[in-house]
Amino acid sequence: MRRLRQVGVVLGLLLVATSVASAQRTTTRSAAQAAKPWEFGFDAGLALGLDDQGTSLSIPLQNVRAGYHTSDVLSIEPFGAIQYFDPEVGDGVTLYNLGVGGLYHFSTSRTATQLYVRPFLMLAGISTSGASDSEIGGGIGAGMKWPRLNGRMAMRGEVNLTAISDATALNFLFGLSFFTR
Image (cartoon, rainbow, N blue to C red; front, side, top):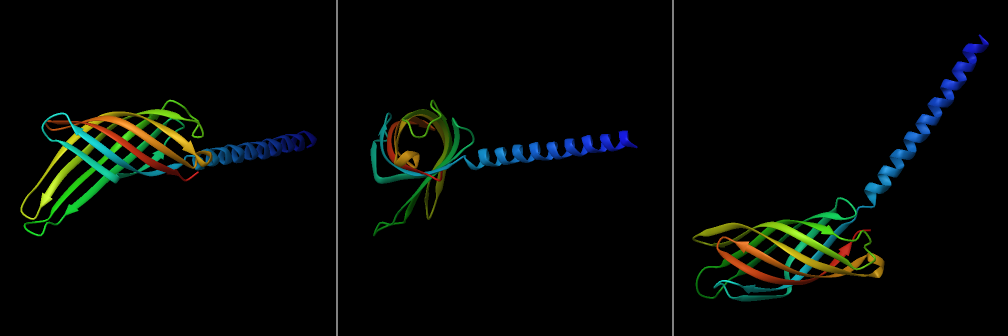
């Protein structure tokens, strides 16, 4: 009987120790998941057409973006823009650009200057009351984030090369980012 009681006490202590260790792992995992911030931002841009499409300047806003950090060095960032022109004569024109990029940061610290690369895919199109057309394109960019306010905000500059159908452009972006954590 005494032996059975000792076994019961040992099993009870193991059960308590296991549940405490499990709770600590769950708390640690939850804290790590909660520490992954969202990055919301917008960019102004200058696009230099390398073919015959010309040059465009968009100030103060070329696109908006929202990035989710999947790890300390990777983030997935959807972006987009919609522009509508309504001339006095003729039909209105809608231009849109929707895409997603993946940022790889060469530094894990958001409170230090970060160099990054960003490959991306996008859908760009035009729509009028009579017709619409869209093209799938992609590109790659490299940029830098300069932190402000202890990593809660950053200035961001990027140079990228974009190819859509048979049009290629060299783009310069400058924007602001705001982080949730």
